[in-house]
Image (tube, rainbow, N blue to C red):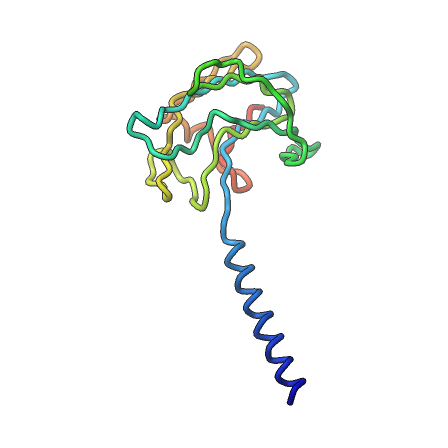
Length: 163
């Protein structure tokens, strides 16, 4: 009787623990990034709306992170690069994105991005005002109205790949 009771407790504990791990695995992030697949550096300038101008908790941030790409072209999350933001304003960023690297400029938690003017959960807002990319003498301007023409969902992230 004692062994049977112990097995039942272990079985119940295992099922409970499995359920808890299953629930904790339901959280996800979708990162917004620009990936430089070229062999030259790219200058990226972007600005976001201030929280005081009618926007709540924004998707885009002024604290980007840059990562090297693996030889297969995916992000190496273990190889973060240092950089200098040369924009001195509080709502703007200017960074030099090295060749074969990617910059994360924002993220969306526990929601799926569909388009720039969708309703987001958790009070998130599409707070990007403008992105300018300068690559090999070519300039590209991205604003909310044309954002979805450039940024595409790729491996669970929203990415603009410069080739």
